[in-house]
Image (cartoon, rainbow over all chains, first blue to last red; front, top):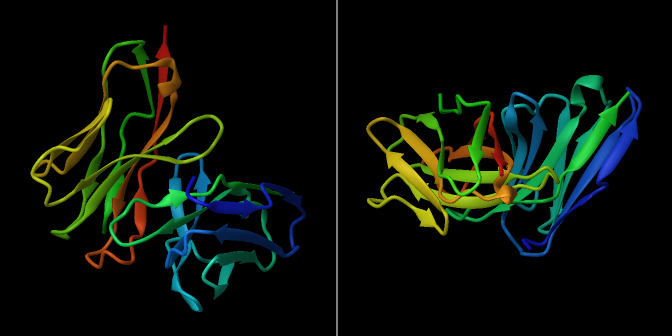
Length: 111
Length: 117
C-alpha cells in the first residue's frame, strides 16, 4: 500500500462545470503527478509537482490547473470541464529513481 | 523526443507457458530508466520491474524478467509460467530526463495479455 488516496473515485458532471480531483498521500513524497488514461494512449502526464507550491506542466496540460499547498495533497482542477476531458485520472508519487506508485484512479465522465 | 512503443495490442498465452511482451524506446539520453506496470481489470497500476540504463544485468523479479537490449533500444518483459491472474494490460514506461528527481514517466499504449487454461 503506497498510501495514496484519490477522491472522488467516480464522478459524472456536465460540460462547463468546474471539477476538482484530490490526491492525498501519507508517505511524505516530494514528487506528485497527475496522469490521464485514454484508450490507445496509455497514460499521459498532465501536471506534476516537485514540492509545496512548485508545479510544472506535462504533456497534456491544456484545460487543467493544479495546486499543492501541503506536501500530502495535490489537487487537479478542470476550470470548465469539456467532454474531451472524460477519462480515468491517476495520481502518482515518486522519489528519485524509485518507481512511481499510483492511486486507484478517478473515473470522470463529462456529459 | 523520447518515446515508448508497444506494438502488440493484444497477446494470448496458455497457462504455464512463457510469454514476451515487446517494448522499444527512443531517447538521446545516456541515463534513463525503464519500468513495466500491470493493470488488471480492477484498474489499479501495479509496478512490476525496473531496469536502469547502466545496469549490466537484466532485471528479474520472481516470474518477471526484463530482456534489456540497449543497442536495439528494447526492453521486453518476459513472464514465465503464466497464470490466469496474469491476464491484464501491461504498460512499458521510461523515466524522462537525466535529472532523476523529476522522475516523469512516458508510457507506451499497452499490451492486453490474456491467459487461457
